[in-house]
Image (cartoon, rainbow, N blue to C red; front, side, top):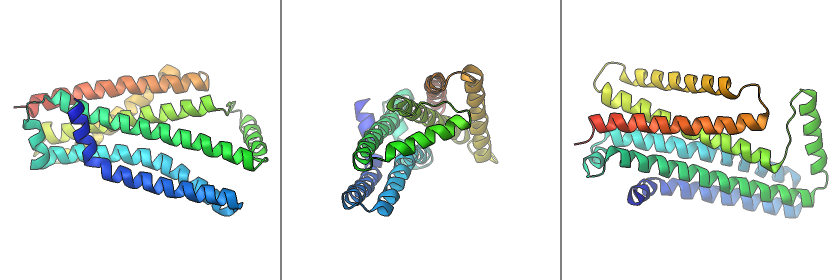
Length: 247
């Protein structure tokens, strides 16, 4: 399994290094603008880092989906399924590598964000006033949210788990279109429909299970449901692959 995870990582490590380099550049700009007290550049770098954090994690998942699709539709990728490894192990390597990459990236960006906020608090004393204004605004909208590290961590956890669920659902939809409906007319559209229906089902289950509860309970419940759904998508996808791809 470790070798399969390494194999999957080698397919995508170049783009991840590029993402890390861009992040490092944006962070250097942020630190320089903070030191030089260039507020306009400072604000721009903060926006750039926020976009990189969210977009980078989304990109890691999308790249994994595209890699999976390539493996299913090219001779070089298809040869992977001719190896002695079972489809459960091959898909498991993909899911674990993608999950680990996203969670490591999420932890990295969360830690970087915490560091930058600490530096901002130390440099601009009025930042705490801005946070208080945000709290007052949310209270006026009847949104009682405690803006602290724990809540931000729960938001990040829920986001990462939900995105992992989306990626594994896309795996299943791609296998349905490629294996079960190979050569059939509109197989791609049917695969997309399967993806949309499953995502709609998961959203309904989530709303039914945790809707109306305290926000922290909703976030924890959403993360738990997403992990269970991801495991179910993995099992269903691996089963279909084992039936139609293994030799």
